[in-house]
Amino acid sequence: MTAIYPDLKGKAVLVTGGASGIGEAIVRAFANQGARVGFFDIASDAGESLQAELTRAGQSVRFVKVDVTDIEALRGGIAELRSELGPLSILINNAARDDRHPALDVTPDDFDSLIAINFRHQFFVSQAVIDDMRQLGGGAIICMSSISWLAGFGGMPLYTAAKAGILGLVKSLARDFGVDNIRVNAISPGWIMTERQLDKWLTPEADAMREERQAIKRRLVPDDIARLALFLCSEDASAITGQNHIADGGWI
Image (cartoon, rainbow, N blue to C red):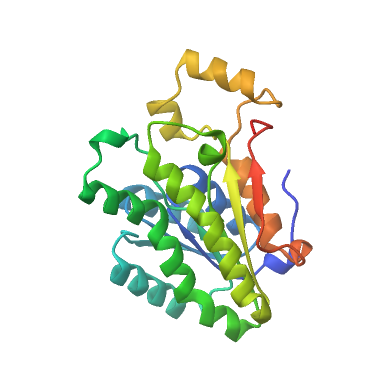
């Protein structure tokens, strides 16, 4: 059972990377609260399927195909959602890709691409919704980080650098826009068992390592992060901003 936050009902919410994994769970969670949810993804089939399913269930959900590395397309998608949902009061910066990339193989083009998908868009989406939130008298932004940099994971240095940089962004935005009653927080998930993780990275050896490292021994799932996002965007968390919230089962 998920807690119900009455103040989330009717809020206009944007979730990036919302067609699968953690993003999909967050879209579902806010829709179940009665929010009006818009979400971006590059995967059009999955996005349209999720929109159709939730619409049939009577929920207010709108999918827009957007490549978040294309800043002009990103701004256009936000304008499209704004015209349908009204000013956006909640933003979940979720889109990312944890592709492995050995440090010695990274080219300048690889560098730009990895930073674009894992960090740059979080700034520009946040920038684009600030005026909406000011108009509404406040809002909430969540930027998705990761425990990867805290745990010192290797094999993906630009992913971990991007996820570390998100904490600096969160601190700065929280300070700059707190005067507008805009709260900005980070969530740092541990190893969340999305379909992508199960298909690409989970092996018996890796699962045994996870079991050893986590204090809580069960596998973590996307809903674990979605429930935290609901709380942080609700008025129950109205005094919380500029913080990093680790949800890793006690790994760190």
